[in-house]
Length: 471
Ligand code: BGC
Image (cartoon, rainbow, N blue to C red; front, side, top):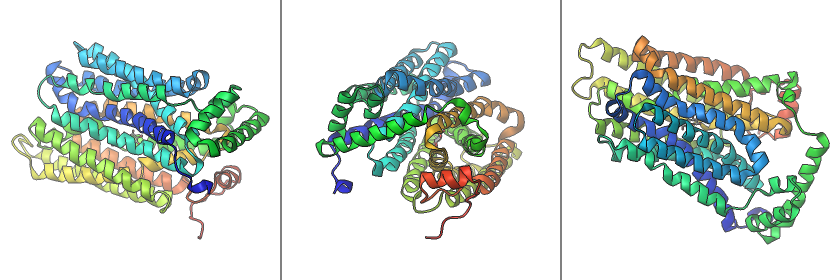
């Protein structure tokens, strides 16, 4: 009964390092929310400096993600992951000791490079090492780990609110960085990569460890057959990714990656404390608590639900219903800010009704995102490209996602300064409507279909595949 065979301890190790990769990504996304208000007073940051300190981590991640695939092919998955952990820990140390905005920004870029590496290498390693039947679960573990990382960062932010403690908030990120390095020093290299280099004995040794003695030789044979047929077809080149046959798949991937960011998720993840401050939460403690529970905990819980549901409900119903929730809740945040803005001394003294409505609306927003656009976008992007170009096409989508995240983080505070909170949130709400139209018209229903069927019908024959197949 190969299907039901027990997992070896090493397989838990694979899940563990994948989780760490997501955790460090998430910690870094979340930590800035609590650190920023302290930094602004302690280092006397301008709006532009606040935006740079927040957003340049995504710029680092963009470059990191662009080079990570090639690097992991050249030096191996393990060494690339170790490099990710080292960069991440080093960046955290630079941030923690930074005397001013310039060094802090340098630390953010270095950390970002580590995050970019990890965002490519951890899911790649998971996909190559996980047994087939658990591949989906391993990849969604990664998304869950991101939200847990954000939650841990908010916990640290909450525990450390008090002047100058921001250094400790950043320094704590050294722990998952070092854990990732140690984890990948212990873990074996991907057998698939070793085999590609012709190191058959090493590949077999890795499979013996991870898959266990009964399965290792069968796995080795499968991998060899896979690589042979890949070699027969020849290496895919970049031109193919942009070829007319793949144009629609490429655009759907790029569209989903962009809409996931421009509907505002990371404006809220990064600037949650600032938003709660504007909504009338006057103390740093109250802001950190609101962020921890309304954003952090909701995100983890709703992602757990999504991971359980994504294969039961279709991708489209999840995406579309999530977008309805996101549109409505962002409009409610906009309205509540409009009321706050129209009061003469808005939110200056205590948590107002507007503040409470903002918290409730943000809970609904985060929950709606976390069961739809958060995980499902990545699921669909992983399903719509043919095998040969999947790696490259996913790298394009990931890079576009970081770029969109960068633009939002870089301009959010200035946008708020220029047009006010309420209009900014109405704008995000309008972009959710645009995403709804996009998903409704273009995104195929991939649930329960094999990758071959998706390729044949949707990519090659241009079938729109908007409906679920009857059971
Ligand atoms: C997004 C991240 C975001 C996270 C929030 C992910 O799917 O790609 O940008 O910070 O969800 O949970």
